[in-house]
Length: 95
Length: 476
Picture: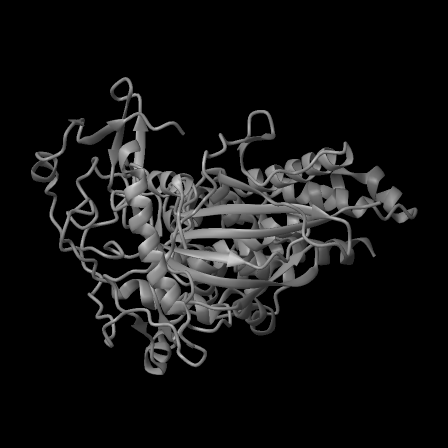
């Protein structure tokens, strides 16, 4: 299966990853290779195999419903590019 | 040709846990920005979610109340999309293996019962909030809400009018509060209703649906759906096509309008979350939740009718909220179950009217169940009449003391002394000779006039039963 320019642009937009014009062909080829691998796997008969939710054959452990976190916003915000009134600032979001 | 309306609802109920679904941050409402957003909530590299046991129990409880299948193996998935209030770049939710499977809820619209299917209910995390206008050209992100546990309850497309949709939403609202799994506060966004509305000709496949979002009152939900149905009919009958989109309701103009349509169609690329293992729910887990579940509203309603002899209407009003029902039962208990009907009357009229007037929650009422019972006991033992009781009730409401204190202080004790009542009757009859003649001449409605005069002369304190009896004797 081969991906073209349009698909690469679409996927990169969804993933919010910038792909330069010069890289498009290279990325398309790499992604196509991955998809080829998937088509090989898809040829396997999985009729009686139930889907796996996780590679580890274990069960989720739960934590009790207790507040354990403390307010660390100053520390966390010290690495943020922009902060105002304790809010993380990002380019304007149009609602 | 008439149109058939098809409505399905998606309800997001915020669960009443202390901490977030995947982190130990508090979910308390109204905290200062980002004070309840930890490294996990921020999606910092290397952070791992740990599932809150509280959300599992609360979900099981809803599942049981809806007679639904409980997902014995529940799996979390990632729903991928980019938005600044979603720091991880995906929402952790459930796709194929939700915690609650197919169930149902019975609604009542104008006396007609209808069973609405509940497709599923799945757990997911809420996103943060974007604030605009703090700094020009920038949005300010508050991630306190990010990771707040939500149970998204999805109905089957079983409702065929705005009224049915609202009846279902209200019933679910009542249920989650009874179960104590959601506080139901619509203003704070703890209970959010999204409506999917479409129309079709009977027998034809489903029409294209539109989604109405972010409406925080039942009244507006009803109006928005009604408007949307009319709009779709008009579009189609004028030869147009309904476009699948999200529409916002404008309550000021009572219309819906299209939200800016997104450039890309939704493509969420779901996959099982590798950070979370499957959750296994055992029969013991289910039984443990069952043992702690309160009586459900429908069961309570039926019991109120059979146990206390209430009308369907009274039982409906009294079980409208768990607080109201519990207050009523406390009143009945404190009056030794002597006259549950009288208790019900005072709850549905005097008490309900007073809390509505002052816009109070049952638990914030200035009188306790014991105080109301104290007053009702005085009605039941004939110390005061129902009419005087209204005065006592008002005084109690205004904080003037208990019923006994008020009756004593204001001298409201009913006159039950036969001699005193006879004197009042004689006096009124003597002063109204012509009316007495008229009564004897066949004008029986004069009776009411005499009773009124006597009650007035007694300052409202004569026992009305005794007055009637005495009058009849005197006039016969």
